Length: 334
Image (cartoon, rainbow, N blue to C red; front, side, top):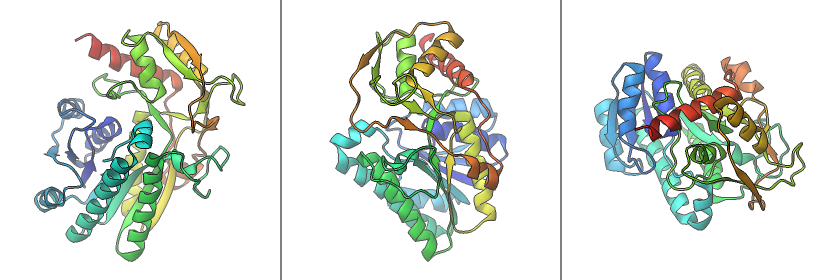
């Protein structure tokens, strides 16, 4: 199959591109590099030993997307494109609603016009909100999101569901938990712009001396050590989940929603201690007040993905910490 990855040069998209190429699929990447780099394309091709097609464009641009579909004729789409910084979405909500919804609506219209009938959507565990208790299952009613980023994920899930009910569209909505780590080659990984919002990139910047210490937001949660608990999943396991979802989507009609997580919750302090132990580096940290909107714990029930697709996460927390550090040290050794 030829698969279009919108936002495919980003952290998760680049790892999915590698997995798809290694499984024999054709890959087309559409990206405007607003939160990624064109250098990633060469790394993807180097890892997989295969070439891919690349279009530098904004997915909300109808003319550019229409040209891509006319020229490359993708069979299916995996939709990553969109802004994703939770904090920025709170201060710039209209930017997030405009971009994330426009990208999706334009993409779905273009797919209809060109007869593409399969889509995998990159959603998030943020849709469960604060009203549900972990482990989260896909049949839970989505809660009210604490930020506009999460709200766009909820809205896009509904847009895709409504579209699928009105036309020939098969969709799999993947609710990610907390992707971390990097490809085992050390060539691709997570490199956010500015001070990171997420824990592992923050730890990595402290590990290489770019930041002096890690701020731990709150140690008074009702958890074992008082720090927040999250379900961390290796990005390579997550990428394999997309290949499984594509295979499922081709064989089944309608819309299916699936969690991609390990089902295990690790606290912030557990992550720090594991990273230090595996990589032999010290991560200084200080405790600061909780961040508004942060939940005490969030982790998946991933049994549905195993039942329907035969997929489960296999890599360990040690693998996540080791691969993340390999990636960041390679960058800083240049």
